[in-house]
Length: 421
Ligand code: FES
Ligand SMILES: [Fe+2]
Image (tube, rainbow, N blue to C red; front, side, top):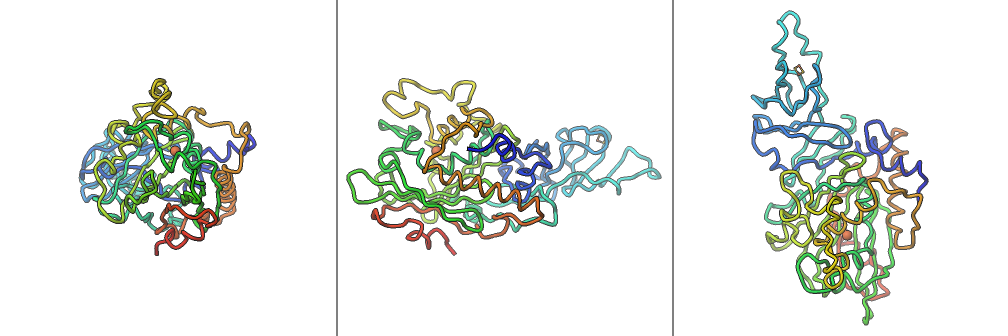
């Protein structure tokens, strides 16, 4: 439970808010490289942390992310002409490079030209893993490049997709750190694609959670007794500040080995009410199949998400296409796609859930710990310090899952594999 004022503070991310200041200390993934593929191609709108921005790739291939509003008279730079290493406003022709420097002011006679005095809001970018990242904080506090392990894999071994979720980012993150819901929300009752999980992930419920604080956030393991066996299904995760989950994806539902895959999400706030959900996974052995890359069955691929607008096909307005006859016999929810099921329950709470009304239990421990860390980190930033996760200690984190004897402590047993150095 959170007080109403703490709930406000922890969810709002606009400029100048405590959580907004914290968010601006990290790299944020904002675009797929393919959205700005061509040098001098079309500029596109980007909204992140409540700020309206425009992205463009210049003639030399650099990606600029600048304010949407031209500093002359605030016209939208989305209308701009992307030409010769800069974006030119169509109203009076002012032109800006990727650093936001005004490089041309053709509407003023030379004697009155003041372009050297004009600098537009522009944020540093990085391109890695098929993703454009932006840093929106104070320039002198820019962290090292965001080298999550997925960004370092060849394209054949990596899948990255994104989808817009219509609720606050914290609700989405909480779903991602809540291991046990998988046995219910994602339970599948009959054979079929996209219905959810059966076997281990559904049968082993009532898990014990262990959480261990680390300098980037925390890692945790759920230990779920397998019915009729002496073993636990142990699934480990990392939470990387401020909104990243890294999880295991190695076993088939019967506990047999599938592939050395790691998966994860970033939940990037578009604004207080909307979230840009990143889904990524990578393989450390065989290449991923196309179905794996598109996360077919998760409700993230082109069948479930418009690949131009990144809006989900199932959403609030159509009640997530819940199918009541399927709910009776085929899956716990009657909603297709594991992550579509996640989005449905998270969006169903309203855009910002009222956390003063909740009743949390032992299996909500990871969520409670995450909230405490975010709260502390907001205070650290307000006091001028460096928050956890703003260095490079998350570069080689892996989620691992194994079937272990019931007395095994997962976080200890799996520690070496969870930190691949
Ligand atoms: S409003 Fe952009 S140049 Fe005048
Ligand atoms: Fe889920």
